[in-house]
Image (cartoon, rainbow, N blue to C red; front, side, top):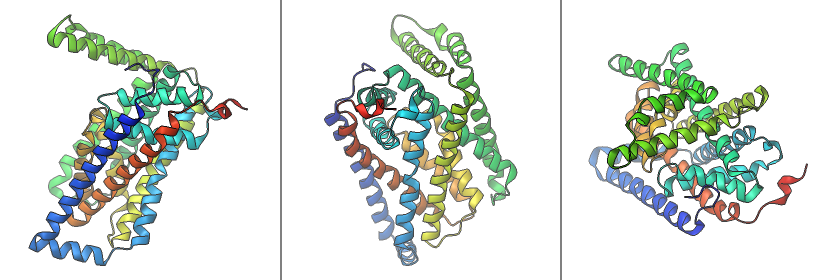
Length: 348
């Protein structure tokens, strides 16, 4: 795909909504299957009876604020980002999430950058550079938060899981430091790739795939380096908005948990969301990687918050439904974002 060319809007919306429909259908079938079993039927009925619909709606609203914070984070890492409308950037973020469902590999990231170019006249490579750096900042702050919570808080982790959770927390913290390091020094990433997959590159077969992988890494490294001229204030703003994004989702998760009559450990809920977000870094570019995120979230939530498994499953499903609803927002925003250039972004 040409990075400067917006995606086929109708095809992307159609593919994305098919994925949303399939995911919602799978959730519906899972809930139906649980409700039909003798043991789970009573648990589902009891869960429904103690649930507060207004609280669950408030939880969805709070979690959905993440799109606005992600838009602000992306704006902070664009040279003229302060002139771009936050609502428009949030719409493109939602559209980008839909495109990551609908399109293979990193094409969704390229398409979102192309939308910024089409809508606001920002060069596509500049938008891509800001978007990739924003993604790295988000993952690094999530990993840093998860590591800090594990080290400083007394999580109610059962004894048999302490080693696994501790090892995961350590790996995530190391990953956060690594991501922060290569975002600041992207040349290191390029050298690592050249010394590994770059050496295996060749004209045909598997060696050609290694060459393609190396090309992608080089492009990412160049994109990371493209916005290094921005001052410390802009990077600090990106970190701040990233922290706001993580806290808005965590707050929504807690409100949702209280809305079903559950009382999770607050630090455990924060650790769960941040650890799952940072820990799934290797799958964010692949369709279906969201299922891996759900599995990590459920595993962490069930052992770090002190709640029963049915409550952990209910919260996992609530978060997944919220993320799918954001894709619907992306489908509604995509035709607008792919339209004519918005001249208002050029005004002081």
